Amino acid sequence: MEHMTPEEILSHLDKLYPDAQCELVHRNPYEMAVAVILSAQTTDASVNRVTPALFEKYPDLESLAKADLKDLEAAISSLGLYRNKARSIKGFAKGVIDQYDGKIPETIEELTTLAGVGRKCANVIQSECFGIPALAVDTHVSRVSKRLGLAYSKDDVDTIERKLKRKVPKERWIKTHHQMIFFGRYLCHSRNPECDRCPFTKICHEKNKHFKEQEKPDGNRKNKA
Image 1 (cartoon, rainbow, N blue to C red):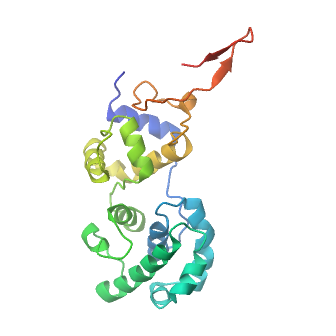
Image 2 (tube, one colour; image 1 turned 180 degrees about the vertical axis):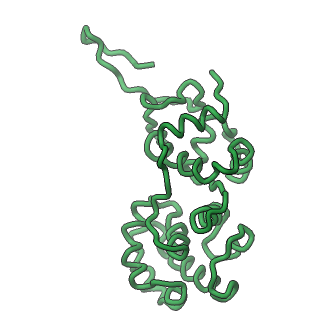
Image 3 (tube, one colour; image 1 turned 90 degrees about the vertical axis):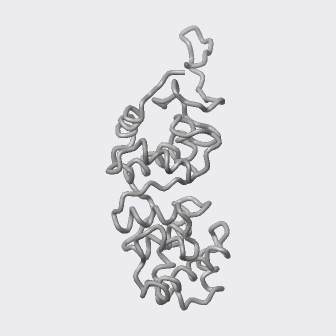
């Protein structure tokens, strides 16, 4: 297996996804934070389908904190785990009001005291809402990190985060987070990665690489290496 430095990996990601950015639609920190909580184990596209009506009905922390739980559940019922998520976003809003005078906090330590906010969510809120360098490890970032040899297959998300922060320049943390998500979401899929289009196949640790068969001039088929 060939070797590629973290710098070379980042260079390829720059070429693949120069404009990668958060795909959760939001207009302010409140909407961003709620959308991130709703995005757990759910696609961003699914979240974006429910948030316009949700934020029209609950435009701020105060209205969300006072929301009837059943009404909240109905508003996000198309999402997986919607009952838990309804409790989480209501609890989040109430926590920000009660604990932080209605202002969403900026530190990981404070953010993770709030309902529905684990370390991954806190990192995303930090970076997207406040521009603070952070590198959240979601399922895409975790998978990509392991396949590209930036982390071991046994590493948990906290270990992966620490390793990435050592290997990626701090000023690139936010950008690299989005690029790795795009790479995992649109090319390096979990079950059927598009290896034919991937610049990392020679260093990839994925055992079951996928290559589409190509037609030879004589009509026979061969696997593209």
